[in-house]
Every structure is written in structure tokens, then in C-alpha cells.
Length: 181
Ligand code: SF4
Image (cartoon, rainbow, N blue to C red; front, side):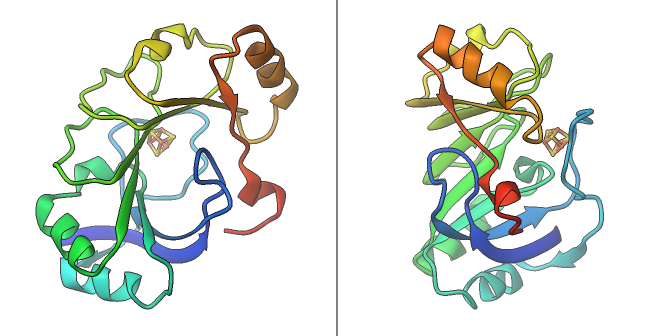
């Protein structure tokens, strides 16, 4: 059983897959307490893997995004297996502090200052930029590196930083800009 905060269908608002439809499975709880955390993830109900997959399969798209909170506290091979059997492409949005099971198709890591990275494979680094030193994360073997304004408040600062450090790309929380979940 896994504690699920919500399962909903929307468009991916951030990062590499911006604009693509996805079913979001938001797991409950996180091991970090970031000051800028904008998700309400503590509540939830216990669901079996089959119940989660049944709910995900009510929607027509192939992509499922495992998010949170911190999904790495919950995700295991049994759930990944059932999602793959259902034909799903599995993405995860993790803070990188947990080792993840094999078999996830796309790993988005949003490392947080001072938190040790234990994730082994990363496809996309996506950092909420608040002026911290992000240069060490360019060494992470990910194929894409995104910086994102904090709740759309410091976009100009992020744009200026990227112009000076062109290895980074801009990620906007487009779902907030167009007011969808
Ligand atoms: S890691 Fe993410 S979910 Fe956890 S507290 Fe920080 S911003 Fe919130």
C-alpha cells in the first residue's frame, strides 16, 4: 500500500516535457522541508498498486509522472512493473535524496541545497533558483539542466543568470501561468 495525496490529469508544466499531457500521481509526504515548497502533499489515502494503476488508466495518455512530496519514499519495482504492463511511460520528479528502483523511464531531479544526492541516474536536472550556487550540479551526468524561477517571482534574475551561464535552460511553471492544476 502506498499513501497517495492525489491523482490527476493535466499537462506537464515544467522542464523538458512542458506542454505534454500526463497523469500525475502525487505521493504523500517528503523527507525535506523546503521554505519555498508550494505543494500540499501531507494528506493522503492508502492505495494498493492495482488501485493506483486503475486510476491512472482512466485517462487516455501514456505518460505518468510520479511526484510528491518525495515519490522516492514510496516507489518500488512492483508498482513500476504494473505501470509498464499497462503500457505507461514512467517519469519521476525527485529531490534526489533516495535511491530509486530500476526501470523508471525518465528521472527529473530537483536537488535541494545541503541535501546529499543518492539518485544514481538522472535525465534532467531542474533547480528552483533562489541565488544559490548551482554550478556543482552542472557536473551531474544529466543530459539537460534547467533553472526555474521560484513561484514565478524572480524570472528576470534567472534569465540574467542563464545569459551569463548558457549551459542552463529556462524552465517556467507554465501551469501556473495559464492557471491549470
Ligand atoms: S523536496 Fe520538494 S516536496 Fe519536498 S519539501 Fe522540498 S519542495 Fe517540497
